[in-house]
Image (cartoon, rainbow, N blue to C red):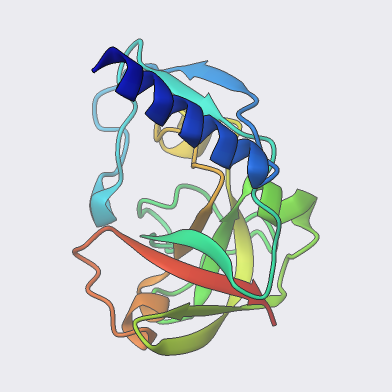
Length: 179
């Protein structure tokens, strides 16, 4: 049994290296102050003392980049935290916008560009307006949420609706590419 767990761990590690992105470190979780950490849209709050993996990179972008779609509100006062990094504005939930993991966000090089997201037999375009930070978290700036994984497309309700997906699911396997 122990050897199976070790083998599974090794395969996950090799797969991560094969995709060109290894963890960059760990971040120790802090308990959110009372009334902080909006848990709307299935958002997770940091847990005191838990170690969260951080990434400075994401897997390479291809014509069909595999990713995990998560739900986020980009409206003021919602679970997205502050205004979007690209334009310093909040965005209506009825607008197709996304935040990309740190590596894919690439220092803002995809800001205000469109990407094409495919899932559930449908494809839609969405505008990149923010970073889903894979290097930081568990603080006020990140709404006391853990760092994002390195393969996240954090999308507005409008994206989920256009793809015909149930927002109550929380996560969905997708593919995406630059438009």
